[in-house]
Image (cartoon, rainbow, N blue to C red; front, side, top):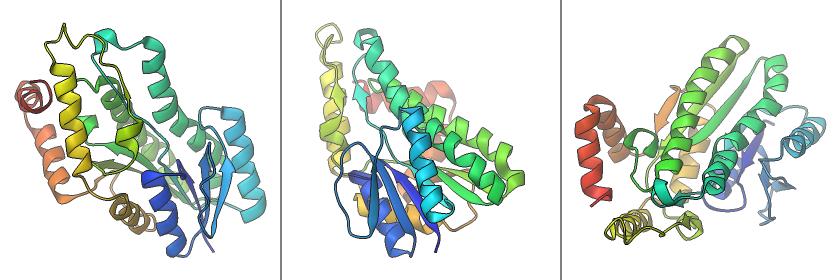
Amino acid sequence: MKTALVTGGSSGIGRCTAAALRNAGFAVYEFSRRDAPQDGIKHISVDVTDEDAVQKAVEKIISEAGGIDVVVNCAGFGISGAVEFTPLDQAKAQFDVNFFGTVNVNKAVLPFMREARKGHIINISSVAAAAHIPFQAFYSASKAAISSYSCALDNEVKPYGIQVTTVEQGDIHTGFTQARQKVIVGDKEYCGRISRSVSQMEKDEQNGASPEVIGAYIAKIAEKKCKPICVAGAQYKFLSLLCKLLPCGLRGKIVGAIYAK
């Protein structure tokens, strides 16, 4: 039986991905800070920003299961607000979880995958990596970092039978919206644009795809040869392509018309 590790597995996309991988026949372990039990899924309490804790937890899985075939890095959260008014410690925390949490997990599993000469690492990014959402600058930057890092890592480890895939997703209807850390300081100075932008974001998210759909998509590609970047959802594939083809100035005008009015 193949073994999968999912981070952020207590809720949202991580929880649904863990369930989908279990249903596909994997032995599934999930990392999260709180335990939200699911049948057939083994929980390990881990904060992905704690490198030592991640290392010990990965070693525990290896000792029990003999290896890890698939890793899905779903752990993350969002912040919003104007760059000018976002506390630096909050911006750093965004990167510590979204980006360096992913780095910690991958760093721990790579020696075992390299020795086994197989493995698939799936890092969860966002179309915000290409769309650059105003008033979500640090979230967008953390996801752009994941996409860039993943493409570079894929080339580093390809000779050892390991593939790295980034899943760039769009709006998903999960508890992520309620959990977002919102900084509305400066809304007066920005003429109400911060609150209007965040309100539009949240409306789009509430009308987004279900996490079960994304979880099933991730489980499906887990056992396939994939491109380094996979965009989930036909409309987001088009949006991602458009963002990459349009001149930066024009792309900025279109995104700004939606999220910076």
